[in-house]
Image (tube, rainbow, N blue to C red):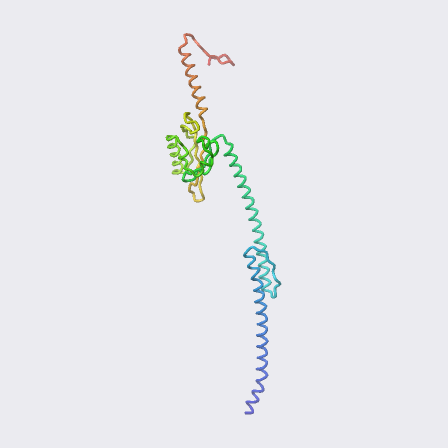
Length: 257
């Protein structure tokens, strides 16, 4: 019994020391854990602000790892802000370029002395200029969204034009310099002559998304050509039937023409 009591007296200080050490360890762990938890909670708000693209202020870190995380978030914010500014500049530049292109296209459609139109893959009119709209005696806005065939009153001309569009849709290749003749609504009694060209536009998938048509009126040229041909025929007839000899010489050297 005395030996047991002596053992207890010897072990008691050791046990007490271990209990104190464990208590101190738990207290330290509790304190460190609290600091870590607080640091993590303090990093939540900056992380959420960063994800939403909002400005934020980093709290003072209470341990090294939290400070490293905070520095990483700040570096990431700097990168994101820099890329955001670059993207804004790029968007502004592209927007300005698109606006300039649109203005140039509007000017071209408004002032070009030829007919211009653009239809989608279903041959619905997306854009048409005043010159071409005037042939149909309707305003530009009255053409938009309508099928190109509905705007051509001349049956033979409509059939020829629609066949041209179908060829472009089927082959994916442009057609240029096609001569067509017919009657326009603006001058139903006058046969007019046109030179038509068609240019397909392709989407990113390689499919045709639209066709631009260019219409050049050569009626006056044809009229002058016809008059010149008649004049030549008349001169030839006169020369052949005159009861005299007629010859021509070049003015510069008096040689026979």
